[in-house]
Image 1 (cartoon, rainbow, N blue to C red):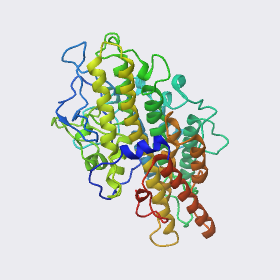
Image 2 (cartoon, helix red, strand yellow; image 1 turned 60 degrees about the horizontal axis):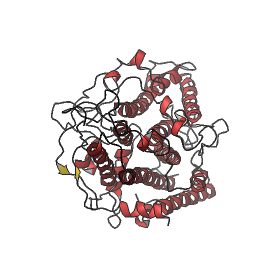
Image 3 (cartoon, rainbow, N blue to C red; image 1 turned 180 degrees about the vertical axis):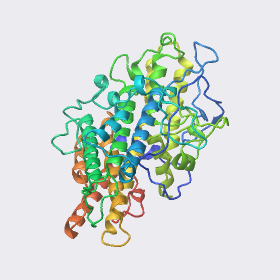
Image 4 (cartoon, rainbow, N blue to C red; image 1 turned 90 degrees about the vertical axis):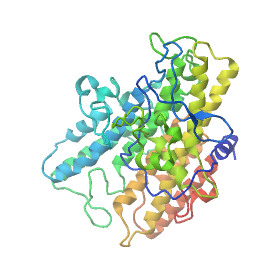
Length: 496
């Protein structure tokens, strides 16, 4: 086991309840991160984690330059989480519009609707109401109230390349279609497939799945791909994980990430450039401002809470988004003999790093302080990536279980496609962290084994593919130090 894998294993033991995780990870999972305003809540001692470090219940830090004002701001990151989720929600409703006869798309219509989110333009659409639903309702009634001037395309890996550790126009791996050469080309390829399927459906041309039933949605393919899940999970990796680990929390480019200036305020802002970089990395992880005090059940099942009791859900501070919710799901689903506490590990890393920056704002970090900050960064990133990797294991296991029901009344083609696509979409994101413990060779092998679609028919072909899935699972287990009791049995049971 590599030193990095050992760090993952040692850092992720804990004492949380570890009941089974039955909630799944959804295509439009409700969740959020925190940021924004000038009030961040209290700072009472609390939080989880090992090692005796004291953390707080709230990611709340007062400006060193403007007394009484918060120095935390990451509204752009929450906006992108919102756009990712709203894209999935919108896509999920298109089939019903076609089937009801209220929408008869021609070529390009559905693509245009999906690009609305991918290429979002606040100058023309900022006053549009988000699709995000909470109970009570969100505090923000328009996209502009969340953030302005933000979209997904500009921050997708390869499109904001100044800090990229690879050239994603030539080194992107994981999808074998010869027309796909970069993260953006993959996103557009999937959108084009959905657009074509919508036109076909509107004209009565609905492909059949392997059971002989018509496909139930325009984002499902007869090959077993759920393009909604693939888009959602890949964008979480290609935007949020890539930006978080390879930009805002990286330390390889002068003036960027952990090498940003900390000796003075960022112009007229209430924070130093380094404080802001750290907050933006935290924002891409997706944790709510009070994530450190939330239970796994709250994060995994609801992912939001009216913390201040004002009868509204602040999308900027009271929602957990994206991978931060997967951390709770995997904590909850881990074996009692090998428990994990990814939520506490990530929270402690992010909080303690930010506390260090808050206490030193206005002076350049010493070499020792920068090394300390890198340690907190590594702790948070390790939990973040392990939340993704263990989620891939979770969906490999779900796919193995689906394969075991093929030919029986219990088989669901839609579930099979969904589970495979969630695992594949999450797995594609593992290449974006420059400090990943998964080697390039093992990453490529995992995706060779997963393929671009699941195997759906043929007894010998199914068994061979099941063995490929088990091998991919074993590679991930070895790279990340995942305990055998969390990997699962040959049929996908008794694991994450």
